[in-house]
Amino acid sequence: MSQPLSIVILAAGKGSRMKSTKTKVLHEICGREMLYYSIKAAREITDDVIVVVAHQKEAVIAAMEKHFNNITFVTQEADTFPGTGGAMMGVSPKYDDVLVLNGDMPLMTKNSIDAFMNRESDVVMSVIELENPSGYGRVIIENDHVVRIVEEKDATAQERAIQTVNAGVYAFKHHVLQTYLPQLSNDNAQSEYYLTDIIALARADGLSIAPLTVEEVEFKGVNSKNDLANAEMILMDRLRRTWMDAGVIMQLPETIYLEEGVKFEGECIIENGVRLCGNTLIVNSHIKAHSVIEDSSVKDSDVGPLAHLRPLSVLEKTHIGNFVEVKKSTLTGVKAGHLSYLGDATIGEGSNIGAGTITCNYDGVKKYQTIIGKNVFVGSDTQLVAPVEIADNVMIAAGTTVTAGKYESDILILSRTPIRKVAGFFTKFFGKDSSC
Image (tube, rainbow, N blue to C red):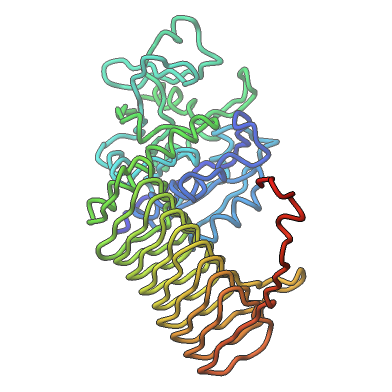
């Protein structure tokens, strides 16, 4: 249910420590940009979500509009008003309660956001106790009230020894922002407008500022490729646990790669080493070891081991075996047990695809369709040169190259070069007493 709360997500920074040409918030975790997770958590709570953008703003907006509607994007004037305080200067929240999140905190949940709403104060700020607080702003707390925050680069040696750090999330009453944002100064080591300076200003005027101790795992920021990998491990573990609690069997779950868009229905078994990507749907199916499935649908089927379903593959009541690759194909009631490539194909119920069969779907310029009817037996080492359409109840002999065209029902398709036998050739070639 929507709450009377405005949530502002700061996503304007470059993220230089990521060592990448891509802006930080667009780096992916479990198949989604990290900013996606902040917006997702916010949308579970409120209808007023504001995202502040600047660096690569067009790419950020385009990426998020693929996932969400009705998000307000505000462009920060980063050259004139840099920093987190500058980011808030162009924001017009809908509600009196304003929560400020960071786009590089993909592990936050609805419950962690709700905790801010349970505190009555002019300002609520998140804090964490760290054994090694290096890299974080320090929080000065006296009598259970926050006195001020000091950025590490501006802290004295005594202040750097404090282990209470700023977790970077704040809840403000709107009047606090209206009063103190215009008073911010960029007279500091980075020449930036710090949102954290509002704490000292509000404190000086006697406003209540309550610290909220939070769990590091949910407020973990991503500032490097190492942080990215660690956050992905945490989020992926959550995804696995969620689906196992829903009834999915996962063998050696820590070896299974699972993305945010993957869904399961019914009784499913996922063996070790499986990689499930994109908007994949698995229904009442068994995915065997070390198979890869991307943006595909698998219903009442078994796949693998060591099979690969590329995007837009649809399987129903189908067996896909070892080293079979399927791409943009629909297979219904099909058996393809070994070593085949089936691309841009539609194959009907009861058909069997022999080992080594390939659809030759690309001529170097365009891709073409292969249509195979019901109860078609395709012998081993067959090449289907698309566009090909094969009717029901057809047998294709092993080793056949089926060229483009339409083939009627109840026939044998056979294309082989006759065997030629040359007497005495082995002895002549290798010599009478030689072995090869």
